[in-house]
Amino acid sequence: MTAVAPLRFGMAARLRPEKRVEYLDLHAAAWPGVEAMITECGIRNFTIYVLGDVIFGYYEYVGDDFEADQAKMAADPETQQWWARTAPCQLPFEPDAAEPNWQIMTEAWHLD
Figure 1 (spheres, rainbow, N blue to C red):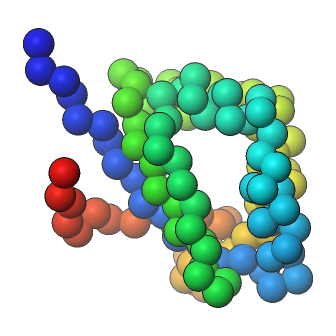
Figure 2 (cartoon, helix red, strand yellow):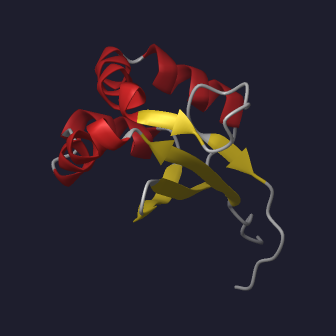
């Protein structure tokens, strides 16, 4: 049986300058229930990097039904509370983007 490679996702956003410290403090003490839900929904190797006001997120999806897992996460009350705290700290990477914060990036290259 061959292993299925994970789906990889990169995303970018910007931090609101007046909310930068709040965002970083939240992630320094991420809520265990939110971390458990992320794991339960097939997400691994989730990392957020910071450079100035830019945040870059990367994660791998190892589940079988991405849309169902995303819906499950979105329906979780604790995750909703987390997003209610973190979303106001963010801006889309591109000012004219339709997304309220994170913008999904296109993978240009990968090496295992």
